[in-house]
Image (cartoon, rainbow over all chains, first blue to last red; front, side, top):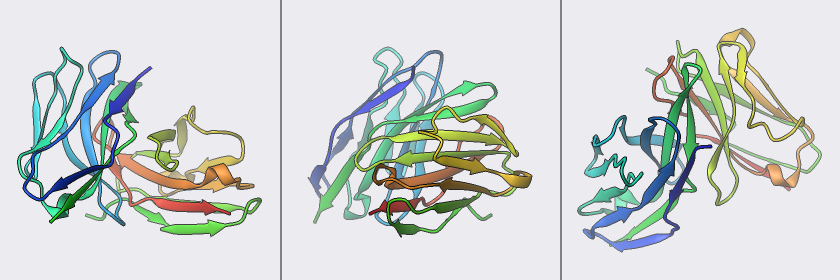
Length: 114
Length: 112
């Protein structure tokens, strides 16, 4: 079956530091890949996505590239801010019977300190 | 356009009691999904509705959980009787056919 593995947290960084959160996946076929973010006290928000190999998803300064050869979708940001403190979930979806079934990783908590 | 809404935002109940969670999807979205995140673990799929029909309920943990979507609009998820291990955050999501799922804020359930 499908699975997503992402790095354990929590990750603590100083403001303006470089961020990488690793994510690898196992899936049959050609899944779409996502990063979701959950800010404190809020729900899940779609941060970015990529639907095919070599696609790069980007939003709010975050980027992730769909690497089929390494089955990875690592999240990066060049300079984090305190407001980026949140839990980040890597996820994939694969089509099944005409709908998308989403499989999530365990989440990585990011804390950015001033 | 209103997003996915869930009610309540937080529920604290005692073991053995009943709780009903509600999800209102984005208007016009035929697909409605329920997920659950137990503390520190991954978000796991529970079930999927297409309109009022259950398309896939393979993730439902046991028969203490009952989901309904009468009329193909809002959905409820009832836990009866609740057990300690049911504590977690329950997310609802909706989507048009074949498209990205949009998630609600979640309901945090605490069973004491």
